[in-house]
Length: 164
Image 1 (cartoon, rainbow, N blue to C red):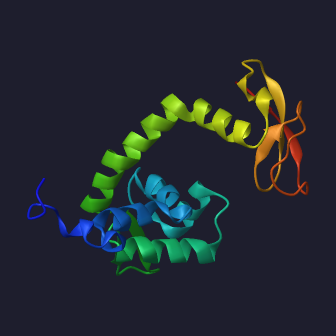
Image 2 (cartoon, rainbow, N blue to C red):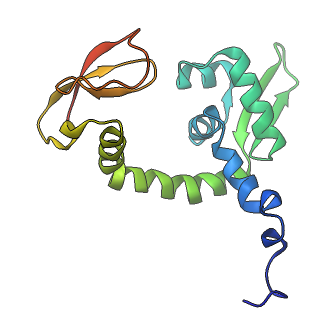
Image 3 (cartoon, rainbow, N blue to C red):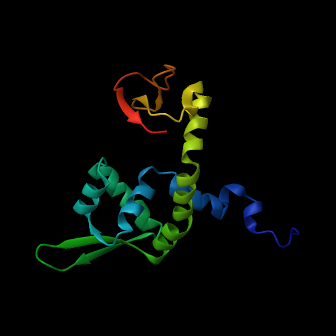
């Protein structure tokens, strides 16, 4: 590609459209809310219950961000009592059917290797075991109980079974 054919993205990478697209994944709850809306329009309360673990404040912020990016639309109905639903726009559906689907397929195929690499980087060589083993869960991560390697504080730990 010659310099005349290069998109303006290469002049200022910080202003690149790729950065705008990757910012959609920078917020923890954005992909989760989008995935919950994939089933169809939902009222706010139903959306919050179906997601679980999200506060009302965070859901509000997430919906406003997704509305601002044109991924979600808000439909208000003039009824008594008033009803509001949120749904994916065509742009939101294209994100779900394109990059999000590809990422989901990638995770299904490579998720175990990703977790093993993360555990190995944390100093946990026992991550390659194919047997069922106990993993200690913390508020910031997980690690194999056999090696005792921990990432993050030890508060809130619990034991869970993990199938490798």
